[in-house]
Amino acid sequence: MADLHIDDFYHDVAGILLSLYNGFPKPTILFVEDLIGPQEPDAFGVPAPRSQACFSAMLWLAEEGFLRYSDSIRQEGLDQCCLTERSFLMLSTPVGDWLDRSLPASVARQQATPAQQLRDALASRSSTRLAEVIQCCFERAAPRF
Image (tube, rainbow, N blue to C red; front, side, top):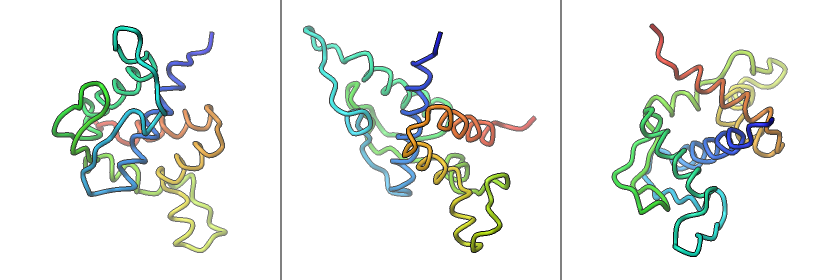
């Protein structure tokens, strides 16, 4: 059985991290709807399960030290949200295995960053590639004992 909720999680994490990276270091409001599109709440006003999952991914990233924020906006988003130093370095430091030495150094360096690899994986719409890049990011950011 496929773990589609994990594929959605990876997609949400990529969108969250790239959205904040693209505006770094400026704190911003991060809305669920901007990441996954509009989702209709149920008849009682409870957010759709997909919206809840995306919002939960935001909170998880904050709890794990990948982002910080000042306040939540109901279950719709996070206010004054910004990457932590840990996330910024994770996304901007090139990965040696991804370095293409046939390219000019500045281009190769940019192409080898996890941020660019996330952009490329999202553009390819490959859930397998996206999972590989997200897992690599998390492995790089894991504390070393």
